[in-house]
Image (tube, rainbow, N blue to C red; front, side, top):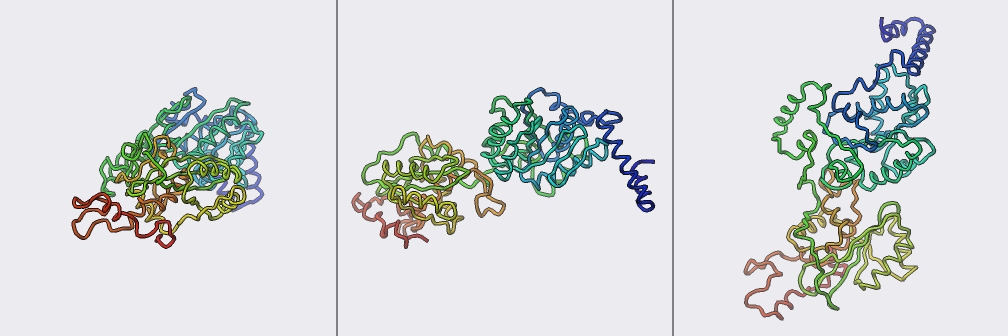
Length: 488
């Protein structure tokens, strides 16, 4: 009779006998885990694609897999194997959040432990599984820097598994790997295993890892079609395509199930194109040119500066400089801003003065006498649309050296409702640029009639019967665009 049937039989009869039975089973499992007697080897449960990763001697591994490929099963089996071979050392599993990590890995690990009698003790209070030999498996979340910093403790990390890498912020994933995990493994020369599916945008740290652009990482990949534990995945995918009305070229199907990186234009917020919107040389500018300096603040994350410039008549607007710096104090932000103000003499300085930004603005005013205007955050969705449209029409140009801004503009995606920029993205320079864009002729031109009532031409086009002076006078704004009353 199986242990499960014996337990069910005792459950409704003798509580004392049931308690004694549980202790006996517990002691047997712990003894088996320590001695290896009757222990199911976790490696023997791996299928061929998982076995290939296990056999790979590389200390830094990446598994970029499609949905239902078996990543979680491999993580559990690999964790158990490492724990039983390395007493008193630590295996760490990091998910997007602690709750999400618990839903993905904790229950799967408990079930495997129960089925294969591995003898692990599960402590739900802090999500730790403890092997009889003293090795531990701990579940953590990466949604808070403070949570990540816990990994800096004295424990020896033998294996770190980072899951759902496609959903981590690029800054946080890189920081977790390079600043926390790698230094924490020096004592035991531990392994790092990163896993996840393809992201929405083929760009950034995770993209570089899965495509072999980062040296020192061994890359593996497979899909649900390689998972022998699934029942007829071919039929499932055929039904999915039919139900959704997709063919095999649909971006979501290619990304989630075929494990392909796809640039889905519908998900991108800005219509940025490097060939259209990037210039190698700044336009000639003189005393008639105006400049707007816009900023987005961050203490732990980056503070970003964006300098817009534009001439006296045309509506083309140029991003002269854009950059960001992480971990900046208010005094350092004030000093950098002062240097930009001295160099470019901007007509306006604008930034997000809600919450943290207010402290930075106070510091700049007290330290250097720099006054900042609060960014207009009303109708953000509409302003984003205007900026995206101006990029598509080539009205906005950015200098080639603004590389980090260009990386953001090429990769930022919408939230699920397409109402705002999705959370969790590195978008500080893009946000800063958006604040300044509202005070440029490019934005102001969107508020004017797009076509003349008489000849159907856009208002900014010179008419054949106009001389240059007439054209300039007609194009002069009837109202100062920086007058608050001009703003919608």
